[in-house]
Image (tube, rainbow, N blue to C red; front, side, top):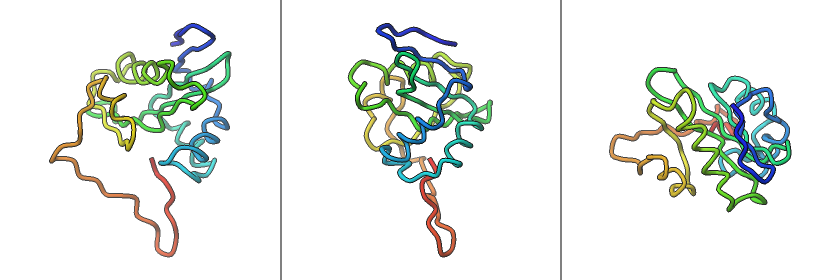
Length: 150
């Protein structure tokens, strides 16, 4: 699937089109949840994702999202971003819409973590965490640092 958003922007779910170097650069340098994430880990997260969706401007990667699923009951949405230079144009909305509402996993339960994008996700039916949510944070290995696992 590739969808033209006008003005040189498009959203596409072709995994072969994802630029892992660009995605890694943004996530490891600018995304609070993935700062310092090693390239080999990021490349594997992309490669093993259930679905990836990219946002492109004139063919260059400027946004990304990935999803993991058991294909039956849930989907976890992760690593969603739009380059700050292109924010405010509705591209994040289109990225999440494509991933959550238009894809093959649309009829599943979606989960995510965010500290700052609650308004965006509410547009797609995500609710505030409730009393049932439990989370075990990343545990560093003995004598080491686990880094980010999102």
